[in-house]
Length: 289
Image 1 (cartoon, rainbow, N blue to C red):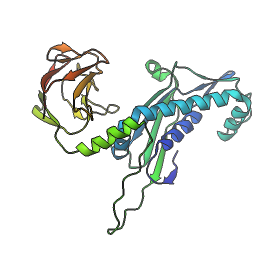
Image 2: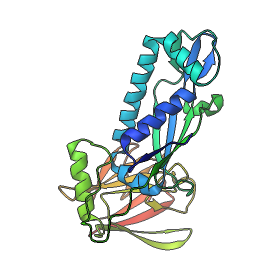
Image 3: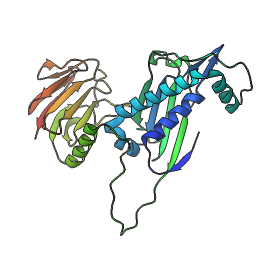
Image 4: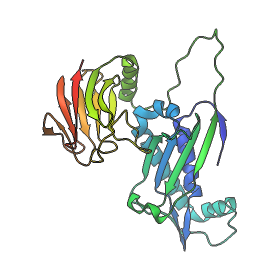
């Protein structure tokens, strides 16, 4: 499905497309209707970048909207079912008694389109009915929304600041502002050797995601190495106020700092110089400026 509206993408645009996909992906079985529980949202890299620092916040808002829609449907299921059946041209039929979600929780993931299929302003939503390990149980519809780009300002127009994509918590906004202030400055270096030989990566942002990457895995530092290194293996973060760095392990086979394991989903402070080992197969030589 394609729709068009003026302006840059906002968080509400993502919510609207997910709710539309939720309705179109319903699966009727006897007196129940299964509701898609898994939503993977893809944006063009240019549209994704402003969202990047607040992706968890946006995903939480989308889950809240899904909860509200499901609760509203179950408050008046007969009326809702009749409207949906009419909209999709399914005729009359007995409306369901209950709308149910197969999985225990909503899964909402937001990714950049690394295949280059999406243009600025396009949203692509993939949905599935069941839990991730049962992805073949059922799938909802795919939607795409195209937003008309704003006209470029006249040459003599004064530049204006971009409108925030979403109003997150104040500390997130402060972090984003500080990130813009440090943009382009080299904060640290990562030196390593992968299948392409010796490499040096300059850290210029307050967060760097490291791993092998992939279609659904956005990373800043993409390593060409053995699959023991996860697609998203670890994240290096800089505290905007103190300037201190930490590394978070989000991998399957572990991350270590100077030989000491960080621990899955745990963080460890990085000294000025250190060796960061990923799954025991590749070492990153860390040096903060």
